[in-house]
Amino acid sequence: MAAKVYFTDLHTTPSLNLCGKLERLVRKAGVEKLDCKDKFTAIKIHFGEPGNMAYIRHNYAACVADLLLSLGAKAFLTDSATLYSGRRSNAIDHLQSAWENGFNPISVKAPVIIADGLKGTSCRDLPVTGGTYCKTAKIGAAVADADVIVSLSHFKGHEQAGFGGVLKNIGMGAASVGGKLDLHSSSKPQVDIDHCTGCRQCAKDCNYGAITLNDQRKAVINYDKCVGCGQCVAVCRFDAAQPVWNNSSDIMNKKIAEYVQAILNGKPHFHVSFIMDVSPNCDCWGSNDVPLVPNIGFAASFDPVALDKACVDLVQAAPATVGSEINRDGTHSLAGEDKFRHMHPNTDWRTGLEHAEKLGIGTMDYDLITV
Image (cartoon, rainbow, N blue to C red; front, side):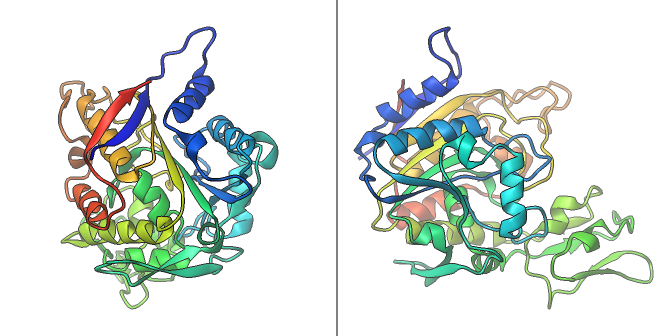
């Protein structure tokens, strides 16, 4: 049976602003049917790496939190620590970053909790049912212990997964540091020495001391220390640090699906995606680029797989933004084409959705209902 995905565009009227449209959408999608009264309800969101401006505005989070609180939920906003070094790799810096980006108990009307504790070690091992790669998933305790999961996902491109949506937000985003190590373990980068300038930025940003410079001042990776977090790929401005894909992108996407299965299994859940500022890369970067497509709208569903597939289809149908990485000179509309494969040709986002479907998380068959 096709899942129902509800959608609204970003047109407003004097009597209905964007927050009003978001509330109308989630109500129409059935959020009031969510069994959340007097239950700990985790609102899984990405707070945004400081310097990146593409993350979801706190105003939208406040709208959803306020609605859940009106339903009697014990709602809180949450995310877990990052694997790479940055301003969200521990709870203190992560909270400060969240506050700087507008996420605090006053502005969002709910507590802000870092899911995996002070150093990313507060986690639970949840069983993965039917997993191929993971028997258990290491999940941040605040998410693992929650009774209900609500996700707010910024839909965007991603340099390893192809795109980042609901599955990525939940499976990777709620994983503890140890869980992120498991998810990344099969995708370690390499250095193209012809592009390396010896700037040492990758070495400075490596959280595991895995990168040094050789006698020719070229970066060298010690794979005994490397965890495959991809931080060097993110910070290198000269395309010297590069992913080694082979099948690692596929495996990571499938592992993410298995983590999602562990998190959602047996729990009420509901999901909202924001198809706006569709940046080429993850919100974990400290900057963002020209969106791949013009802003499209909001979508919501009880089915995370259907929601991700619907968002992909909406992005594929749209023309590429003039000046974006995939249409710099304005001559490549790419309407109807796979923007994520154009941006990240060595990735295949389909593998994650197909694996999630096999695990029983949801279906790629959906009906899009415009609100």
